[in-house]
Amino acid sequence: MIRRILRLLARLLLAAWYLPLFLVMTVGAGAVCLAVSLFSKRLARVVSGQVWASVVLGPAFIGMDVKGAEHIPAGGGFIVFANHRSLLDIPAASLAVERPLSWVAKAALGRLPVFGWVLSRIHMLVEREGGADAARRMITEAEGRLRAGEILAIFPEGTRNRDPLTPLLPFKKGAFIIAKHTGAPLLPLAVVNSGRLWPSGSYLPRHGSLKVAIGEPLAPAPRESLAALTRRAREALELLYLEASSAEAAEASPAPSAEAEEASPAGTRDAGPAGTRPGDSPPRDA
Image (tube, rainbow, N blue to C red):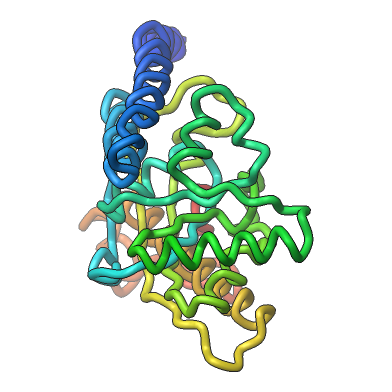
């Protein structure tokens, strides 16, 4: 009972200062981005990415553990594609890549005040239902951005995944259409724990640590079909996400004490159900 009261008080205290800070900094960063974009869109992306991301994570006491940063291409344009469970995925990807990202988002978001204006000005909005003409416009714009060395970032699931038992939702094909037509490498990026730290429907994040795993870039093969490339990319991201989830779960599990090891016959633990190994547990929800 006492723990519940203390937890409630802590949440109320967090709400009293974090929500106003989050709203002020989000609107403020948006205004700065619009002003700076008149001179440098790259600098505006730094503000909307790394600067805003630090404000979102730092005051909420959310840390980050990044694995695989060596896989990030040293230069040139490429496409980052990531899983999506929470608002936290955006700052996580921005800080993990450590370079300005041009987010590819649906055109409907451009109608939102401030946030939509920033997206329209410095990021890339696409029409999902626009047919062949919209696809051609998307490819043309993406090709120009990649040629200029921009890094495009996209959530190919198209929306947040709220199912804790499903690693990934089916993929939209936009990112892979761009990759096929431009030859740009695809960089898989898995974010673990974001859905637990700031679940859908919650007004406040929880403190904790985000795990980010970056995989090796995928190069579109010359004669590879769009369906095959999409499937290969999805399999790569799903494997990366599951491996990162399992590693995080293993780190969170307490190690067996020496006394417990000695108490088991031959220093081993009891076996689990058939088909499992001792100590196996399902990955935790991100």
